[in-house]
Image 1 (tube, rainbow, N blue to C red):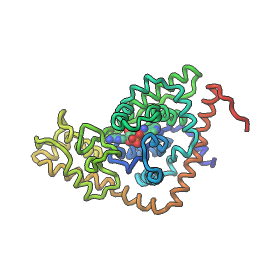
Image 2 (image 1 turned 135 degrees about the horizontal axis):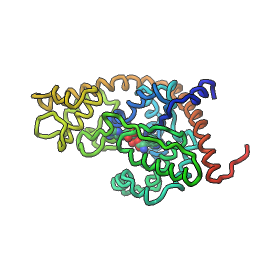
Image 3 (image 1 turned 90 degrees about the horizontal axis):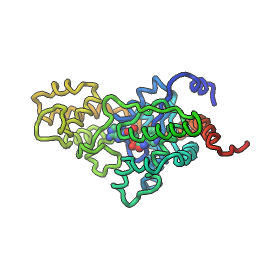
Image 4 (image 1 turned 90 degrees about the vertical axis):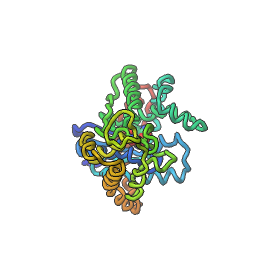
Length: 342
Ligand code: TYM
């Protein structure tokens, strides 16, 4: 460990940890609900961000494609402005502590509480052909990810709230059974954009795995594609830009516009008073395309420098393993696993 690292780890900054699965190019939902904030908060906290490739094993992806998507996801984090001089960035499976801790967390998780997870219910309903045990114990692996680093805050979109509550429950139970071991992490949600919905079905969340390309903005879509997708977004027949119950499509577009421009809902309503949805959709599309322009440009540059990417992954894995191993060793002692003498 370098002197720099140890100085950074000793300082009093709070610890932030979050992860993202390499299941496709990040969506505007991932960006506004998570990654954009990660960039902002790295100035203030000790931030650890990782590509959750072990979690992605719960769904079937061609192995070659999974490898490529993992590389791309790592590059995307850097392209979104996550700076490896300020934040620790790594691939989950490169740090073996996650798998080991995941098993220990499995054994501290109850069947009943895992059965209540809405993500498990949704995903198993969507993919009845592959309801694997990993899908069921996914939240235990996630709890392990968070607790390994003694995270204070976990910035996530609203869809992960239940998993975070679960993590706190497991940590509380563990502390009670084995003695104080884990900090209890808190959620950290963006003011605007915690739940971005599909452009074609605004009652369900925008998701990387949506099969309808018009439903999702990928953060690498070019300007014309973005504008076209917003133009065909589902709205309503009222022609009134205001945030109100029952106007799911418009509410979603207003949420996106507000998250990107920083304008309040009232200001947006005033801006588009007397104008049609066509003008509003175009403005949203243009604002989003502008926000994502640097991401597209950075991504190509980073992907073209494979040696740089691999070196960043190697450095990230080394440091993540060093930090996580401290907690893992403590946990193994607590539960009574005999530590090997080296
Ligand atoms: P994943 O890959 O599904 O999503 C990554 C992040 O993006 C947020 N997000 C959204 N936010 C707003 N609107 C949306 N439509 C939207 N879709 C996704 C998610 O809330 C998330 O913050 N289980 C996690 C990965 C994970 C993790 C962890 C996160 C594994 N271990 C430990 C935090 C801590 C997941 O599947 O994220």
